[in-house]
Length: 360
Image 1 (spheres, rainbow, N blue to C red):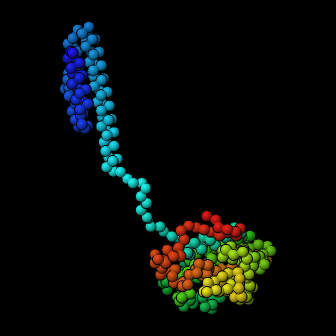
Image 2: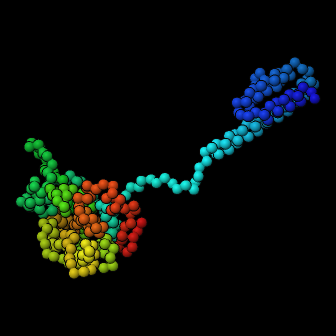
Image 3: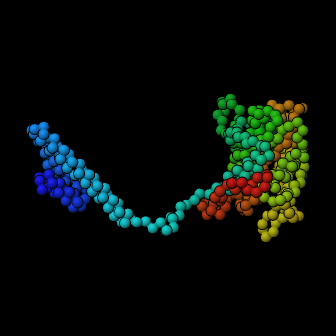
């Protein structure tokens, strides 16, 4: 066995016995490093004759290639062994149940607002929005609310603070979403069909009232809009919202400054064991106000009342949420804790539609 064979045998044996990567690196440096045995032999080729260099160089290149290949193979084997050891040490039982994560729920008011929007969207109503801090004209004057009306007094409405020298008109926290209808008429003209859901504010606080609550108001303006169209629209809404096959509504004469004629709307119902049932029974429950739009309101919105007419309606979102889901106290919406939301909250948006059933 010549010197190269002995060198090959020595390093291959060392590589085979290396127990980890640091030991393997020491062997690599000893053989192929800048001062390694094989590297030093390669440098001596320059002092040999061409014939010797050709023979000796070829043998050294073969040896270098074999040692390098053995080093790479051993390094991969060590890495595989380390991975196997780690997998055994960090073994995970995937059959164990997952750790539970807390899940949020959708608030009933948000759920009902989405339900209402989906139902009216099926009937061609767009959603309109407007500012919650509203000027006196849009909130009162444009809606034919007279200066002496109780709603324009400080015991009924939140007025924004004004410096006595401030020339701007008064501003209020909107008392209804009707100002959005005025803005929609000014922006879109006629014909138009919109609903305006959102927060409103009034100086009220008891078991059935809160200083901030939610309303949805709607209007439809066209050439031949009538009370019959209004009643059909409300019947379809109530049928879809309360998820009953049929409903019976009745109109009671009333008065609102912005509609003429005006009507309170009652729905047939019954109470059994404290549970409200819509669409059956001998009782009646008032759920909203409505009427044909007052000509002055149309004119304030920039629409000629001689050419166009329409209906309007408004209802409390908090109130219809209480009726549908059996929530006994309006204050629960604002004083609720996680237990309340767990009981009344919604994990997914199951929205009833006019065409029947639920849509995800």
